[in-house]
Length: 398
Image (tube, rainbow, N blue to C red; front, top):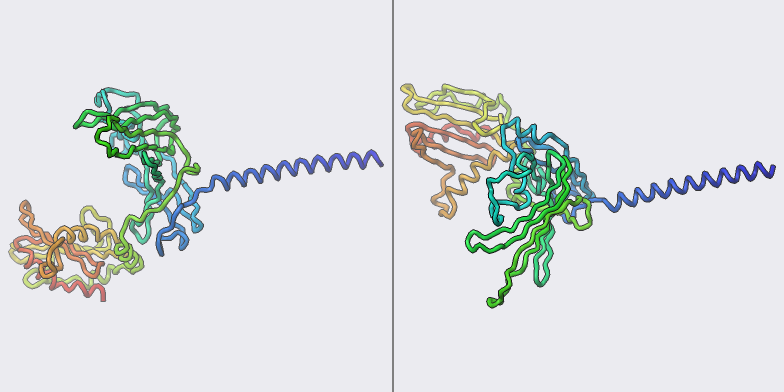
């Protein structure tokens, strides 16, 4: 019996030791996860605060496709989910030559004694850089997630900028560049890199040490900025992730309103579209055919002309509900046309005469929602505006 009890006791001790080892391993793993937790350092205001709801961020591929690459959770933690893809295949599919690989590392034509046309081992490398990651809300980009750190001492400004670099192969990149001023011929920046890059996405640190300008004019010391590149990790302790708002509050508020509106249905567009405008009759009436350069299909395309087809109006009436970016073009045109002008000189529309087509172009927006793009042949801006007023576009919003 003594032997059996001793045997059982020994087995229990071994099981206890194994359990303790496993428990310690799990604790260590959990502690490691806590150490590598990535969090945002700041908050944005009101509805752009991630505490009010998780924020997704996107990346635009070189072919224009936008993909979600991660999100910020309500507790501020960041999850990166950057997909791998064949960067060379995308370049080939759109017949686009790759960007020069060295440009991501400040190695350019300003480098001393460098022949910009000389062949290098990196000429056939396909690569792409991703800096700030765009955050979309209400259909527009409202902020960017970025890692930029600036520190200042009495002598220097130290800036650390981080970015992702997608490379089509694993390579070692080692190079130096003394950047020379085109005006004086003096070296103003020493850039260097000595890094191992993996195929796919790499997280890069750009470390710039910028001397402060000396007030001593008699100083003979040439102050040179140094720029060094190295690989890093998005969870490294010295990487500080922050949010930066990139749109003004007014545009965000407009986008929010449009985002929550129900688009005007096709039936209402068709019932509203007038068949006559004074002496002009409709020749074309179609829904869902957007103007060139736009994707919003919730629009009405109308063409009017007189009997002799001496006068003609070709126009689009576009509903920006769910598509707030449609207003960007007209808002820019209004800003350019009426910047600095007195209120009495500001018209509700913007016009421009096209000498090549002999047509007056007109842009008009109603209630920051309806956009009209019109072209009138053999008529000036005021006459074209008179025809548009007869359309009673405001009835679409009743």
